[in-house]
Length: 528
Figure 1: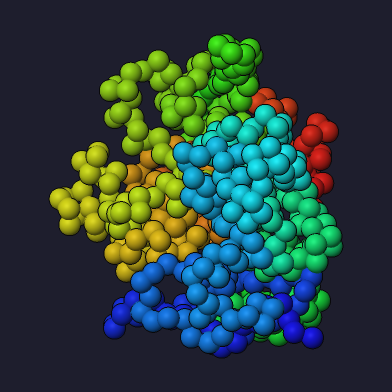
Figure 2: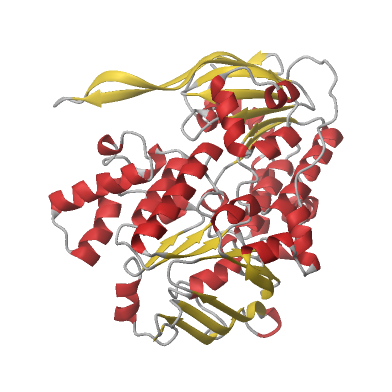
């Protein structure tokens, strides 16, 4: 029987001459109808490059055309004409990209973006397309789906944007779904629902899935076959049971053993460096012909908190619970009501001009690194930009030297300083975002899902790095994450948010071992 997907001796290289880099070397994979093949490996191992080569979406120019063969149901793709590739993309081939904010058009509504693929591939009219869009959004559990058709990507949370991407990918019932980290931005409860949804679609449509993930717990739940990649090569592959239960390659065993471990060091009982009292962020809801305010979406509703030097405050909750909005409000990047104090000084009412000198002390690592890094600037320029703004460093050469030191601090080769964001893996981009924050030696860093794009082995190293930096400089962290294992390893105290409110707060040990609120208990149960 002919496999649905067959890849033979695929090799891909980037760059020219001395700068030529082999990203994928002699990779061979086979995927049958209705099966799920998981590609696992650390950031930069070649997983996404392999996946992007199937629909011919690799970044160009390449040093050479990919070599080898790729066949879908016996049809060759590497030499397919452009019209045929356009028909396959979004039709027989669906793809969920790793970073939804950069994959969704920021100036188009959800209805327009999802409707476009329905019109192109199915020729649906306006009403039929609208009905199908609502059905798809309900399938991926987007809250209030019918009323969100006019929403733009920036009005959704990270997890909600990921669900919209999945809805677009399955819109035309593809035979092969390529899912590049499809659960990265999702909290544990929604993650479980999405995995259940994908499994149901597989059964109903006979859909095959190429599933890329650094989360081995997720892979264990969805995969039939597993291929482990390292340095662009497949070092081990086989059935899920064989690879996970009796791994043969040392690299596979290292991946399976990698978990964030330990607990953060105790901190002194000092005066809080950052405080908030009765913080509120309400967004108006408008309706009627005149678009009058008919109510409010209470994204953050009466939240109070405090974090001391050297302390990590973990913030957990489902997608849309208000975690990121809270973090942005604390940094004065989102309008809010209430009291915000930094080092005892009320900053909630400061003008932009008076607040600007304090920006160095209050830094942020955003959830989506590709969306927050300028595509037109090199890594060195991105990291050094804040140094130039705050006049730190001895000229351009001195700032570049500090940028390279920051890259080394986040376990990246300083030689990457000359590269651009599109030339890095998702995990490498996230570490560049961390380097950009720490290079200014701030007092407080809001970390919004800083490990979501990283595989487990890199997560463990990043957690250790953040602890080291915290101990060295007395940094205070507000650590926002849906990954409860990482939150437990990082946090001294934890806030649990639901619908904009804090439903439970306490020491990390108490929250994770003896939760009292039913919502907290449900989150922890879903993470097991």
